[in-house]
Length: 230
Image (cartoon, rainbow, N blue to C red; front, side):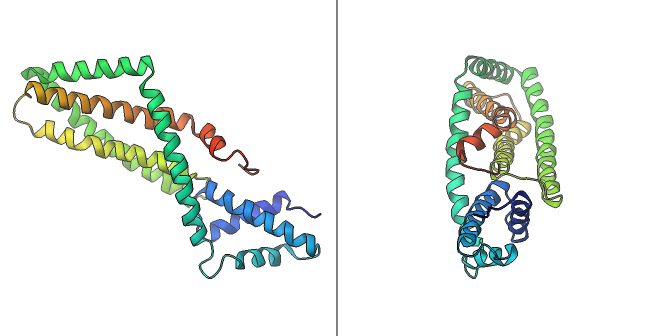
């Protein structure tokens, strides 16, 4: 039986990109589907031209093309990815080294917030972090846009990690602004609450920027063990 070759696989990836499928893992989902359908058609008619065969399979997706399939697959992948991302985040948080880091950050923030000089240091530090965080967020978004323009492989998982990085910065900003605008050092209860939130936000930001990106390939293999073309 005639099989789809590597050159034809590349053509299928190109075809999915031409039909506005951005993410490589979603492209791969469709490439698998198209390749299987094309090979089934060749069982009945081995002489069928590849491009005609491709158009025949594409017509089965209906008037809206890949749109409905993309939406359904993206929902399924989103659930799988988020489940794994939360699991990896939790596992990272309960490690002794991470927990010790949390205690140290909490203790530092708490002690600084209770005296005038320390509180000023904390305010200046968070002002700098706010600026750096915003610059980082813009750079990450620019990097992702450049990848799209250059037709590089972009995974839905990668986009989700980038989004979680941005969300971490956005989550951090209200506390930075509050500290910058606060006219006096914090009370004991305020200091505990703010120090707790700051410590958790720091750790989540570390996880989304270091731990999760380093595990991207393992997560992709876990979610897509059957994939032939990843």
